[in-house]
Length: 192
Image (cartoon, rainbow, N blue to C red; front, side, top):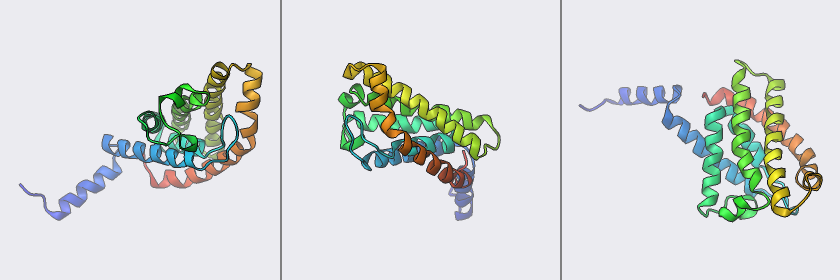
């Protein structure tokens, strides 16, 4: 039996309104791709560049929630592992994940999850709660990143903090503000 045009349109509208698995996968893929684009916008510093990856990681957690936000970052990391040049500076491969900056990549997954879960904790998270969630998520990303940076580059934790956190604090605060503002608009459009 063939569906008429109105029934198809109604079905599409219902899929958009509901929290369907297909919809979540599409959003996860979209935010994974946005994180990849954010990785290509680079201010080169050594050993770690400044990128917009954390902006999109934070947006994924806020807008998609914990599980789907984390899934978006898993998609992003898997794209890089299979060889697509989506990591900072156009890098790719398992070597990047196991290298000095790999902890940040794993941190994106955990950070997006935690940001999303914190935002989900409140029925109507305000700007302050969203900002707090992003700060906690960024601290998680830093923790994973600094730990692997210290281990792989044979640095003390203090030196790894000086190299892997301090140069990024001002930029991350600016990205945090931008993320809160963008997320407040996106949450109205994208329903989880």
